[in-house]
Image (cartoon, rainbow, N blue to C red; front, top):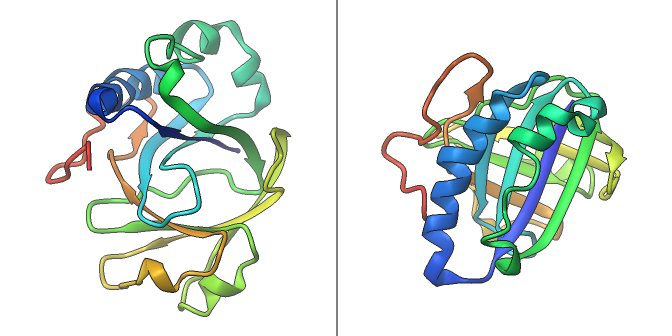
Length: 186
């Protein structure tokens, strides 16, 4: 299943520090939770959506309801909570693993159907919300390799383009989540 967390952040003075916390502390803590398999953060290049997206591959809802998740990964935002807005969490089925999006690649997500992605020559994966907010109920996503260029201004409403902020962490990898050559704070 795919667990998504989306939000925006309203304090430019502490945003870099918050991003360091999320990327360098929170993601490694989450990937250490039993039942988490991949974790990666993204920043929206398009408007009309929360600025940040974290996408995790997990075993299921029981992982998020467990003590280990609450101790290692759930919450821990008290210091920045007042600046976190437009916060949404969803658990999607029908897709076992989130795609790893590397440097120079992008993630495109549609809540209005697969057609906007298919029209751009992509083969989108369908995800159906099964828990948490369940909104949007259906999403399609695809990875754009570096050879595909999209103008975000030409994307339809509810189709969003994201750049990776971190490399995808995998359970047991011990990897540092910063994507080489990328600015975490961009």
